[in-house]
Length: 103
Image (cartoon, rainbow, N blue to C red; front, side, top):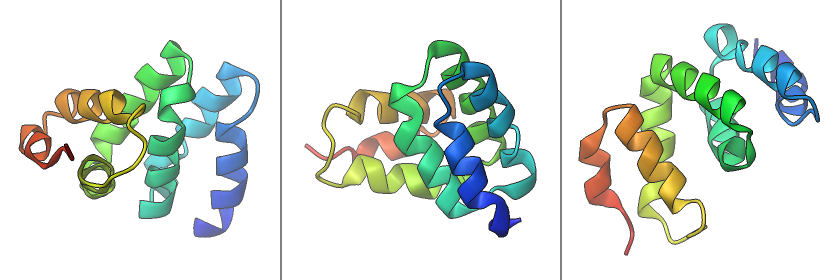
């Protein structure tokens, strides 16, 4: 539920990758735009195993992910994260979003 979001967010930042993976599984049950945005925001700093698992879950929640990703690709913001957002769009097979990349 949305009441669980603060706990899920905290677990997604846990020091142990196994905890992050377990917390990521909550996206299947409690996905919301805010939680998807949080996962996208912390995605660049995740270890590869966590990032891979989260990408699969983001694909399952593609409707929320698409909107959140579109905002990240089209705004002037974190240019260091831009390669990650492009990779997410490619993995999720959303090439139409790549035309929105801010230059």
